[in-house]
Length: 242
Image (cartoon, rainbow, N blue to C red; front, side, top):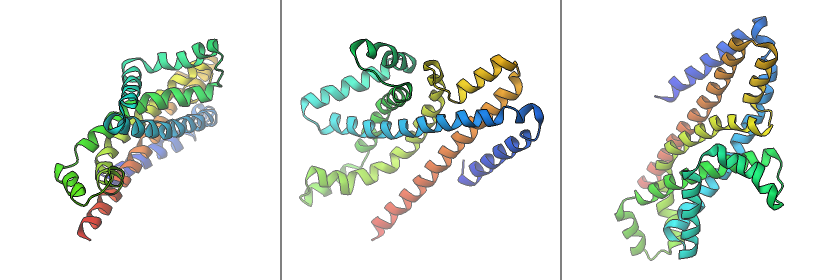
C-alpha cells in the first residue's frame, strides 16, 4: 500500500473523528480519551527508543561479542520472546519491589514493553545484517577496514533498509500492547475507556472513538516508516551512483 493511500486513510479517520465530535453522545468522551492517548503515545515513543537500543545491542552482541556477552544477549532474547508481555509487566511491577527495586508504573511500562519488543527487534537486526551480500563483506576486508568501520560504513547502512518494515510492524505491536499498562494503574487510553464505560455504560461511542484513535496512531507510524524507507533507499542509491 502506497504512502498516498495511507495518508488518505489517515485523513479519513481524522475526518470521522471530527464528525463524531460534533455529536453530543461522542463529544462528551473525546477530551478524556485524547488525554489518555497522550500517555499512550509517551509510553509508545519511549518504549520504542528502548526497543531499538536493546535490539541493536543484543544483535551485535550475539553476532560479534565475546562469549559472555553472546550468552547474556541470548538469555535476554529467549526470556523476553518466550514469556508473555503481560507476565513481564506484572513481574517488574509486583515482584521487583520484593527485592527492594522500586519503580513507578510509568517506568515499569516503558521498561517492560521496550525490553519485550527489543528482544524481537534483535532478530530483525541480526537477520538484516546477515542478509547483506557476501561480496560486501569481502570488499570491506579487501579495503583493510576494521570490523567497526565495516559495520558503520558498509554493512549497517545496507542492512538498515531491510530493518525498516519489520521494525514498523514491531512499533505498531508495541503501541497496541500499551493497553496492558492500564492493569498497573496507568491512565492510558485503554484505562480511560474502561473507566468511562463503567461509569456511563455508553459502550458504542466510547470504544468506537478508541478504535479510531488507535487506528490514527498506527497509520501515523506506518506512514512515517514508509517515508523513512523511501528516503533511506534513495540515499543508498545515490551513494552507490557516486
